[in-house]
Image (cartoon, rainbow, N blue to C red; front, side, top):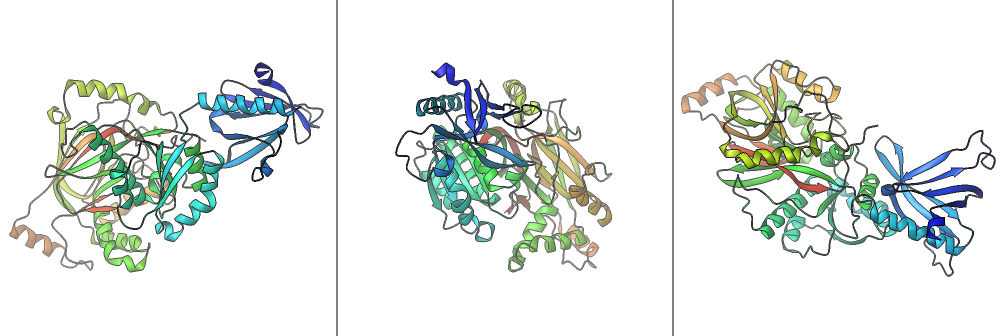
Length: 506
């Protein structure tokens, strides 16, 4: 019977179809006469994009099935536009209940054998203040029923204070969970990132404060249900910040490894990050915006205008360890997409380098000393709805590198040209005041000013309407301020995994 059910005739909306279950697809073909079409046509669904299969009519799933049914319903992913996913269902009618039951079992078995392992139990953290208070409504109205339909058990926790999720992860028994999910913005994701990475290192006996320590990759995957104001991490790993799309990636068990940058100051770990670490412009904007919180999200635009007009630059020395991979560079126009070869081939290459010597022992560090308007370090494109290409369009998610962008001192007009290219898709680095490098580690040391130097600097900005300048800036690390100027950053290869598959080519 099982062999017969791999290919047989069933009915779909009263029309006879030939249903075929193959190694990686479920497909059905309509007979041209019965479909009243000139040609027969076939619909095909990847097995790893089937969400679930249930006996009975999908419209009656909420009702108890009192007797065996000769119908079964397949729920699957459907692409509605670009990167956006939705849930679709199709109900087949078999000759009898036994045939329908055999099809359900055969499809379920094939689902467990195809693709990445699917989660069975998730720990969900909801930031009730995320997205202007919409996070809870988004989860309970759009997402929770999808997890229930797929048979995924969930424990949902609404956070009550800052770092609630991080602290919970550090102390909780996580052995029964297959993944962690955050419902909120980038700040909520950062809490889960820090909690999971620190918990993993603690369980493995690894000292995080040692810059040359080899951190242990995390076993649990992280899912992001976007409900924030920017959702940069979600957008850069899926190409869209849509809650239902993210939930479907979680349900089918998609897995995307990601590099993590670790920032150190005076021998102490400061913060982990996956997107932007910025000194100068982005650090100043974030710090200035803190005094404008009463304005709301518009404070970032106002702070940005003020910092552009001030045109402040900061002297210092940047030392960086350039990546060894000659097949990849920040200006090669090779985008990181689903199944990226650069990322998949990075493990063997980095393993060979690490076996030869540690990062601190390598002697091919390069040095740039100068006056910088901005220093950006990003482990991914850092794209968002306002900047479709992001800060570095060809940065890779999981190749063990980050892109270092140095914006040298220049006029306001030149700096505005650079910023405008984040949105108009022109080459952001084809400017005389901008240079970019693909790196594995960086050290930044600010220039120390004596009293005479500070006086000269203040005189230079005497006519500036934006306040007196500071000798040093601060670091913006994934939207949080690091109150230090000297900083060391190291990229840790594929330290975490997301419930995602990267941006699909369309």
